[in-house]
Image: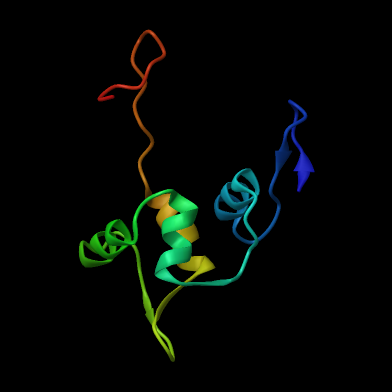
Length: 95
C-alpha cells in the first residue's frame, strides 16, 4: 500500500477494493475463501452469502471440498456493488 494525497494508505495490489476492506477489518488475504470467510468479511451471516450466490450477485467456484470464492470474485462483487446514496444533510438515505 502507498499513501495517497491525503496521507491515507491506498492499495496498489491486484485486488485493491478487497485488500482495502481486509486491511480495514484486520483480516488476512487468503486468496481462496469459504462461505463463512466471506460472511465475516462483509459482516453478514452465511445465509446472506448463499442468497447473494442464488441471486447471481456473487460468483462461487465448485472446488474440491466445498464451494469456494476466489479473490477475483470478491473484487468483482465489490466493484459492481452500488454505493449508498447520501442525502443533502450527509446522512445515508434509507437508514
